[in-house]
Length: 180
Length: 394
Image 1 (tube, rainbow over the protein chains, first blue to last red):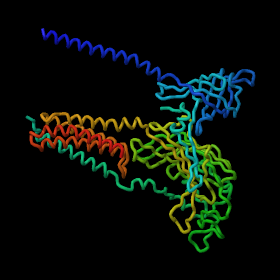
Image 2 (image 1 turned 180 degrees about the vertical axis):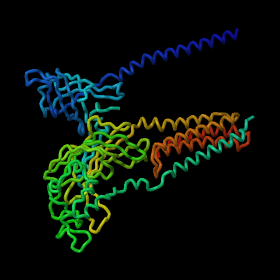
Image 3 (image 1 turned 120 degrees about the vertical axis):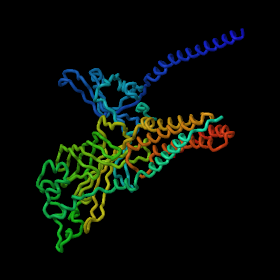
Image 4 (image 1 turned 90 degrees about the vertical axis):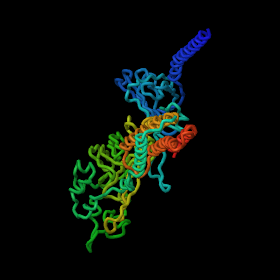
């Protein structure tokens, strides 16, 4: 009789253990997409850019609308030299064609984790009043980040030193530049 | 009743300990001092004095040291030198024989110095580095491909570029005007690696440029700050760029002849590459810690299983020695310990602690073995943590 009782208790314990195990697995399964979903969700940052150059391509002597537009811009709020070259399609050319060199316009950046490249990236999604949708496969899109200072020897400027690492004040001020 | 280990087991342990000691000695003294210094010595300029001593321009010697531009398009001396029609040495005289000098007052007495007090031509040097390939940390050699631009306000004298830390193999003269020159150059260069922080090291790869014949009294290199950069999509496999640096310096040499007092300008471009920390940690630190952790498991083998306990550390010691040997194969000989060497020293000391605790059990009476077992199980892990922490931080 006692043995039967002990076996029953053991069986109950085993069942409870299994229940906890199944619950744990289910929780992990449920939490995984939530966690990855949170990570994949883009965070939007508002900033300002100065247009350094703007040129359209593909228009026929002003008669046809340009097929492409390329901007070189500088992020004015970021320390150092943060520049980006972006090439947009016909829609962007039609909307942002009026932006001129030297103009400072608001811009929006979507900052998210890129699973394919396994690092973070900041995509320009708004330039002035225009929505921006850049082709990720476009080689012309390019970003240059550096913080330069004069190199001195005995009080005389002898050269230049440019930090290329994205850290410190640069990331504090412009978090969308972070890559890892 | 505790089982005593066999004589064979003991001799195996002794051999393993001896092997570890030999490895430590090898790691400490594997490099002869002065090896680094040899790499840092100024480049020899064997070809320079030869043409200077001859009155006529020595075509063959000049060609050997001449820049790619001169090799590609040989021109008469009058055309080559836009600022001065002849080389300064051709104007120097030696009435009493010996090294010729310039008559009259000049800042430098060297026959290569300017014979007059004309101000030097300031040449702005721009550099766009396209790529760094085949970087070999063992020899410090790498292949660099870059654009080099020289810009001045007044016509430049004939430029004969030399590369003190390398050799240009491919060149393309894209512009050769009196006040503007543009080259695309590619060649092998060498910079001594600094491995003190290996595997978390960063390496400064330099490209140094000088004019072979003209001193700072005729030609001064300055850095074109706006045009010192990396090409789009610049990549160095396994490394990330930490910083770029360009500086103009001057370089003097010990006297090679009488009145050898001329100082030469030099442009030095540096790209600093940093090893990816995650990769470094996984390839060096993780294996070392796994070896120590597995060896530590032996501390929980009871005194009754002395044979098992005494053999727990030996395979890990062999693994540590092999791992350390593999690491050393990737690096050149150094006169100092790298961070990885210090880590491995920590691993050897940790393994030795485990072995010593086991040997302690052999030395005490059987009735005291349990006490030793308890003490070792507490003390060895604590000491191991301290040793490994010191090995990582020092």
